[in-house]
Length: 101
Image (tube, rainbow, N blue to C red; front, top):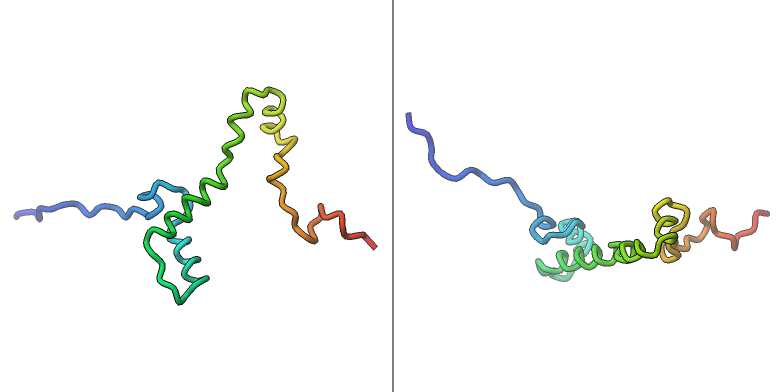
């Protein structure tokens, strides 16, 4: 009996892995299409969007604080966070504008 020769079927590679980003490229495409259903979306648009969002959410400023000593230790221990990390959410428990009447 002879066995079939040929290549093994390779495993599927996600578009995120091909682009080298962590954010899901397929999900980005779905969200773009859902928001603008009548427009045609190019194949590079969700890849670019995922790369930009990954860049914006990456904490680039934290490694620069290692040389600052006490500031880095406070951030690592969780005592403080950067002011830009807090978002104002109306109606949240930290919202002081609402009075408890």
